[in-house]
Image (cartoon, rainbow, N blue to C red; front, side, top):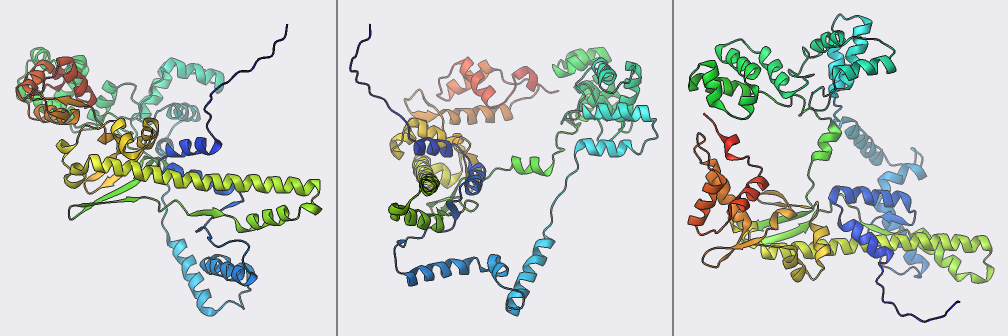
Length: 485
């Protein structure tokens, strides 16, 4: 049996502009630049340039002045499209020619990949066609750090099924030995031990190098665990000799090809700050990094086209109405995007102002111990936004100061109380821990219990497990792995 009933519901829905703003807030400067370029290509109603504040329904003379003013700004780009070379003044031709020459002189980098570098060296070796194919396949399986992390049996199976070559593991191992003889030293190693030994084999065979080879060959596990007493007893040597051998080992590169990056990888690894905070005579000046983000405006032709279509309702056909609807959608989308960019900039500005207000001492001095305890709620209350908004703003954003570039998350830290009841940042505790670990006796490193006792003496009541958590956050190993001889 069907029933009819009335129901009242309270729902909260995000508008398309709010969704767009949320997505834009999360983007760092370099990704926002790409997002703006994509929107400019996708929406013909959106274009670069300062927004025209004059009304569209002004006199014809005013419109012509506005158009000519805009044309003057882009005259160098469009001059040749509307004038022949004979009509262009000589000084303009010289200027355009000079600019073209400057563009040709701009240097650009073309980096060689690790794979190409190894294949180039391989071409200098006198190898049979069969061995060349095996070597090419092995090189194709070497990772970015220079290691071959696949078993030779798996490579042999692949050569059978993919290349139709029945190759024994011994043959593959011989070819691998040829690759391991290429530069950089250590390439083609199957594990860390082999990588370090390959590098030592190329060094001059001094007493220290010979001893280092023995340590890595016979006592590799003891070396990684820093059980130096076992090594000393097993080899029957003194601490001085072992110390020299360990120095030879630690000077080696555990990732021989780790720094081998192309130009694109280098570009992607660069940090572009979203904010600039300068300390000048005790005053802090905040500015936004918008140099690669163009000004946006509504395309004048589309706006006038929509006004003409909308004003001529009497003669509209179905096709004309569809055209009007299309133009309106594009104009609305363009306006939404412009408003979202503006609101993003305002949100970022107010959030950064709140952070500067809370961490003023750090921006003036650069001293990490001056950082105050600060959580998302503190910034949200001062900026007037929701905590989720502050979280999105602080994600993947960077600020350039007089003392370096820092991620926004760097300024957030929890608080703890000293024995006197004073509230301090946990970052201050970490800084003290780090200083004690740096100055500890490396023969007998400080344990977590000893660090907790030292902090307690200084008035910081902190448990051992909390010390362990802070140590891990600082990426500092346990005492046993910090031991040296």
